[in-house]
Image 1: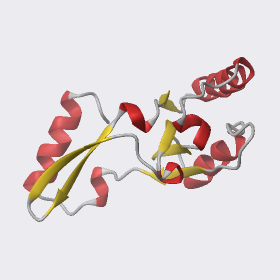
Image 2 (image 1 turned 180 degrees about the vertical axis):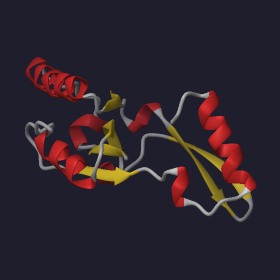
Image 3 (image 1 turned 120 degrees about the horizontal axis):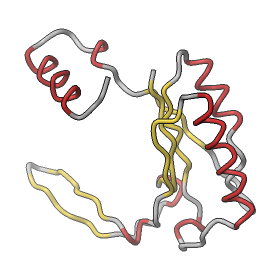
Image 4 (image 1 turned 90 degrees about the vertical axis):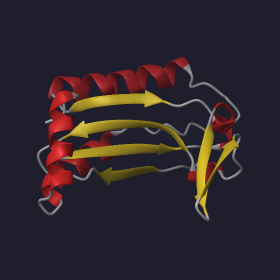
Length: 138
């Protein structure tokens, strides 16, 4: 079961404030634990929304909107993708994440990925499975 652990943005992360050396060390140690346990798929911190853009769909049209975006609490500052055996294992790892919010309140959101088995069998699902094999997904 794959889960994404999402670090929500703060005013500091949106202002481009980089993590301290101490924070990088704590997160590095946590990442090493994930690697040793064989559950880490990917992890990264994200630049502020000033370095991003959105594509909005409305009324059959697409509009590109450049950042920065105003609602920091709705933005993502970083993530881990983990592959675990159970929802409880995902919860256990999430509770071990070092607090990334040095001087602010914050939260980490945990979301389960869809798996191909969640969908009714169809040609589209079979094509998606084949594509997954080509790009190295299980």
